[in-house]
Length: 255
Image (cartoon, rainbow, N blue to C red; front, side, top):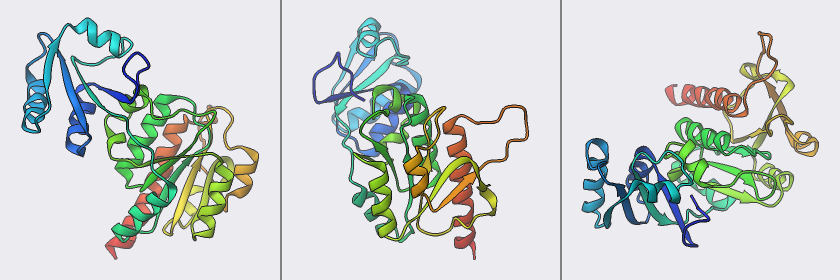
């Protein structure tokens, strides 16, 4: 997660769980900084694992960590790592192929809130999605806040960044994927067959799917709204829908 206050070409990973997951994932970590007085409990376990990998450890004043993280909650530990690279859409498809699975991809149409992006990446990783696609403009990227919100899941989830979401949808359709969009005026999500090669498109906070993106979708799915509030947070809606895809796929494996 890049911090503009730090050296170019390096990322800051802050917090006990994100740092621990970065170590587990094999991320290239250059060094770990620990605040004075924090070398105990889970931090001590993380440091021991880092030492096994030959990663330098340095104890510093907690104010230094505050500055490096922009006063975010670092829990007394940060890791300095090489910048996390985006992947290509073809690489995401290859991951599914290598696993012998039908592609399951999450496409985010201008999600601007880094906490929503992080939460969606976390759920996508847990639900077994093969990758997430985001646009280059007018949307959150893989920032410090996104990594923190993902609770370390972004270390495992491939993320592609594309110039044009509608064009990317066309490319995926040519490769045999069925495109499902999430919107209030769609068909009830639990009545659709979601077992095939597919992508789920989630719209931006407040605005939903762009008109052209919506037109490109093969099917529009909706969640029933039975209360007085007529919409869900983007990351919550994405989570509900992702797990319906996962539920149906697990049914196939169980047969």
